[in-house]
Amino acid sequence: MATAPAPKSVRALIAPDKFKGSLTAGEVADALAAGLRSAAGSGIGSIDCELLPLADGGDGSVDAAVASGFTRRSYTVAGPTGQPVQASIAFDGATAVVEVANTCGLGLLPDGNLEPLAASSRGFGEAVLFALSLRPARIVLALGGSASTDGGMGMLTALGYSFRDAAGRQLYGSGGALAQIHSIHRTALPELAGIELVVASDVHNPLLGAQGAPAVFGPQKGAGPEEIAALDKGLAHFVARLTAAGLADAAQLAEHEGAGSAGGLGYACLLLGAQQVSGADYFLDLLDFNARKDHCDIVITGEGSLDEQTLAGKLPAAVARRSGSRPIIAVAGRSLLPQERWAEMDLTRVYTLADYTDQDSSKDPELSTSLLRRIGQDIGQDIGTNLL
Image 1 (cartoon, rainbow, N blue to C red):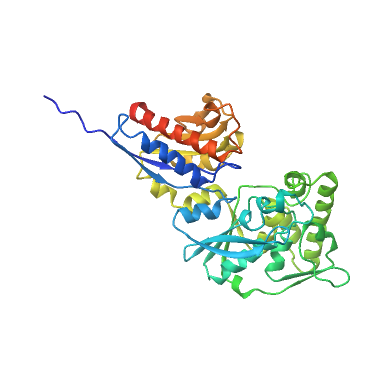
Image 2 (cartoon, rainbow, N blue to C red; image 1 turned 90 degrees about the vertical axis):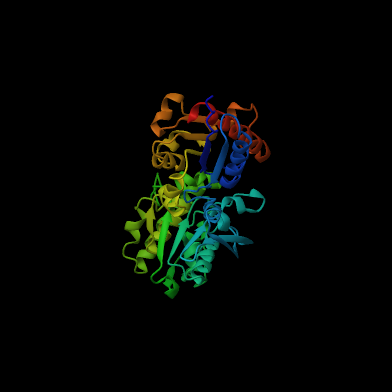
């Protein structure tokens, strides 16, 4: 009498981005893994889950690096409106990851009050200074989620730049202070010598104009038409004063793709000699995605919303592109992509929280977690029947 074959064991790589406003990438991965593991026995012997929470250079970049093995280091910096905040960086002995979101991001504004003119990037510069004290070979500058539109004036102030008004008074660094700059003095920062600076971002906007930082990103930071015009004028003045201070490429760099990211922090990073790279691909390399997926049978990725921007190269698309011929499942809060377009990302299946509830889960972490566990269980059952 023939012996029934032993149930198959399946290895799943769970590599999602965050569900913005609801769950971190780590929380998404944990919930899906819990559901998957509970489905073991549904036609398969076991489901081994490897968790790889991801980021693309925006908020959550430090958490993703820590989840992959980096060490978290904490430091107190000035928040977006000057209040002290406990920030953290990730460090592995050679590479430090510093992010805007946990130093001077929108989520750190007191009581959530938007401050388009008063917010500063100074805390990000202070975190970079802390990272330099660890003597890294490189610093990855993760720019997403900023509260300010100061062109990086605040960051540069923390890194040795002095900005003064016509009366010689030191300016703190904010969007509203840009127009007051009369003179600029630069003090060399020896710690920056020989350090590789990498801007991980997929934003391509220039600093100024109709596609610039104030016009495109100002509204989400609370800027109305008058503030947008003032910020654009202030940034143009900023560029002119930098040119007058001897930075010959200041005007050229303002037109560079990505100079407008994070309220113009991309511009300040370019002034410091940073190299710009694709945030999604850089973080997949940094977190060793290729080696991890090679040991897995199926890849599960996702983000809060699957849409045209996803297809344009956001993190799930980069994951799918690198996953080869193995099944790729996407999990999202919602999907605006009809099934006939799944093939553009080689997706085997898409699961959305919106298909499991009539409630809005986008601001409800508890509901999102519960639904992701249910989805994980359903994925596990599908794995046991027809996905592999």
